[in-house]
Length: 231
Image (cartoon, rainbow, N blue to C red; front, side, top):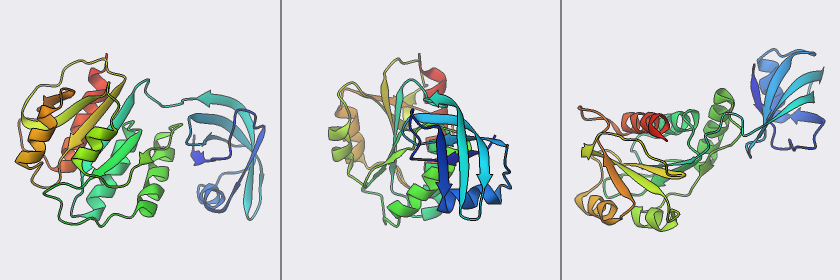
């Protein structure tokens, strides 16, 4: 079943009309009257719907069944990734973070970050596409780039912070309701940044592989471990 983005969807909706980009997407998928699809409002609600009408500039969908929190974990995952020099690698990391359940995506301005070539508008478009691909009810929140210090100040006090580190322990079971995975840019976090994270009592160091991983690979490995080891 295909999934489309319908931010206007509410629990009271009986009919949803898709315009512009989503209507074009539906036509590109060759969806026809009578076919079923999934709609996501990106704010915690999905719905199964049937297509009532296909017109040149709009698609009319009739709601059949509401699916609150469809595809969502019962805990919050925050991803904090050092700004990478390559924009495509950053976008890849975002897409996979969305597919693996992240609710927040933070780009960190670290000592080893050379450039910040990311564009929030483009990242938002990538996030919407990944949300539809993974059929999730929630659209990831993309935060403005910030320093590690600002990240630590922003995180709720009960957050479990996982720092991807070559000298860390093997991933283990945890029960925190909010968890933040922190991965450095090319070259990892600087010694000062590592000291900052380690001094925070909420931080655990996880070794994600016996090999040295690229940033986006560490992010994927860490997210997989987070979802597997949650209590």
